[in-house]
Length: 294
Image 1 (tube, rainbow, N blue to C red):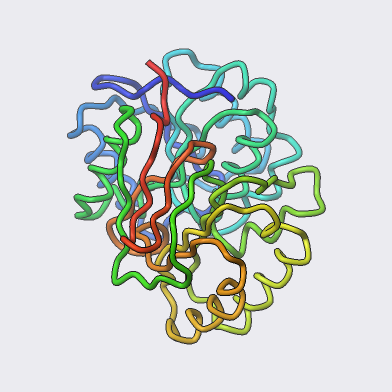
Image 2: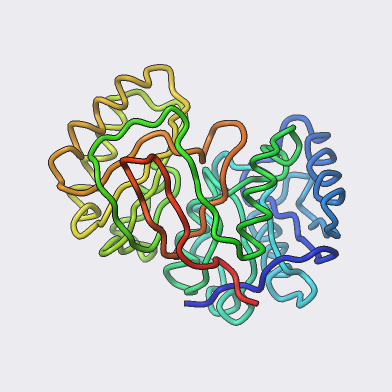
């Protein structure tokens, strides 16, 4: 498994837009300005601010990957559409040029396959228009700490211990409704010995139940060491928590709900493929190794 080089002041960040563009393009300006304030240089692609064909979007992404000056690639925002690009992503090129690749939500379908097939650690974290454009100090501090190699701890926000205990394993996961699109495809993922993490937005309990049932039938809970659930941004949060209890209380592994990542303000950066310790009693998820190389 390859780790990208740590991000430092004055490094060049490419701004990628494989999913949606924000309705308000000024959000990109605000996010870019914040990254510049943090000391980074910015390179926008041809598709950073305008609708493009799939071929044009992929060209931007591959250009960032092959450019030796680009040290990180941060997505503009999520939405939908990233999955359709997967067959054309040059995983060999990504493996040969490991970089910090950051995003969440729909970007799950880029991050997890890159970890699985290109064997490069990726980062489930803040995006330009979704987080850096807003006043989110924890998003910024967690991102900077993680991409500089610090061993960060992700706290729970009004956490709920579904099942107590502690576990260690590599972090595998993303947005729940995107995770269920990958099993049975060429981009399937392995959860054996992992801490599975996930979160989502706007999903009612019956849909969460359906997705978890599918993952169970696909064998994704078999051999999992622990389950770390981000705070769901949903109308019926108690109903969703009840679904988690039904699915996970009998697994005999630690399961914690309410960790501070995903579709909520001020989010942690969660590196995919890095060893971590879940403490479902204390309500924390702590990295056990740096997510980047020196």
